[in-house]
View 1 (cartoon, rainbow, N blue to C red):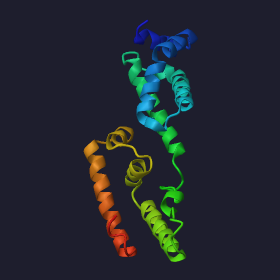
View 2 (cartoon, helix red, strand yellow; view 1 turned 180 degrees about the vertical axis):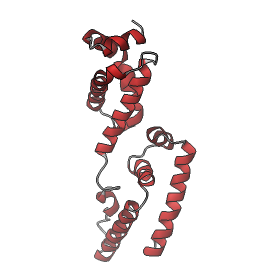
View 3 (tube, rainbow, N blue to C red; view 1 turned 180 degrees about the horizontal axis):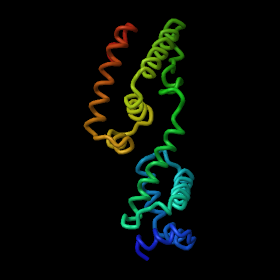
View 4 (spheres, rainbow, N blue to C red; view 1 turned 30 degrees about the vertical axis):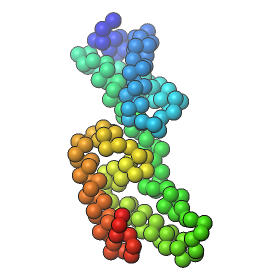
Length: 186
């Protein structure tokens, strides 16, 4: 059965059509989700996202254009579901306190206090960034995503992501330099 017929059958609520779509496109939906999630995806996460993809397809089947390929719908749904999963996994604070406050056991109380103050300043400045810039920073420095992965997930050009990282680092460096001695080498 071609995509147009499958879409029409889905729109009429025929469960057999959904079974065919699931059998034919589960691997594709999983690979789209995996490309967004990268190494952050467990097998269980991917299975849950793929299930969500087909539930969403079923719920919106009556609004699908039968002249478009099913893959285009499935890719969009899988990509959005994976992005939503990443957003739900994102910590409340842009960077984990443990990483920022990691103290050497040999450090004295003054050094530990200074490190804590610097971490709080950095956290405050990151929270003051524009949402997109902060998301790029968190994805790059915390999630260790590549510029290509960030560009794909955020639907931006790679050069835009690189430029925003560079501008953001420069602004952060300037603000940190003004606020905290010894942070000029960020």
